[in-house]
Length: 86
Image 1 (tube, rainbow, N blue to C red):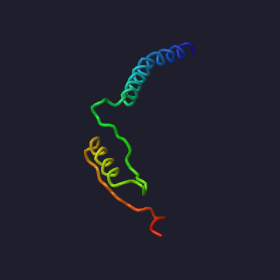
Image 2 (image 1 turned 180 degrees about the horizontal axis):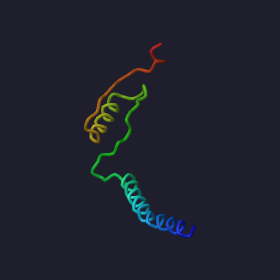
Image 3 (image 1 turned 180 degrees about the vertical axis):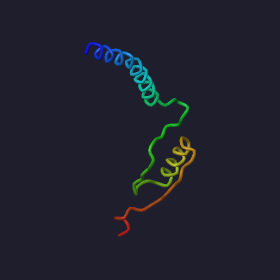
Image 4 (image 1 turned 135 degrees about the vertical axis):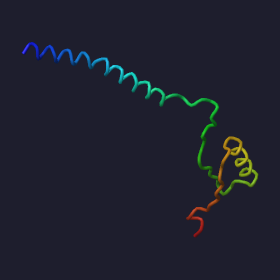
């Protein structure tokens, strides 16, 4: 019985460094995922821009021009509200 307990203790002590090594690797992996984005990437900003019916043409064109300054590839879709169609 004493030898059995001694073998169990030795096995557990030998697995301890492996567990610590794996936990450090996992911790580094998770820290890399949490890093702040660097300033070289443009900010995402809103994916949709909404205008009221009172917006003038100049305001709409100015907003589109400003949005294009920060976003290289954009698509412009103009749609009408379902309630306004009736």
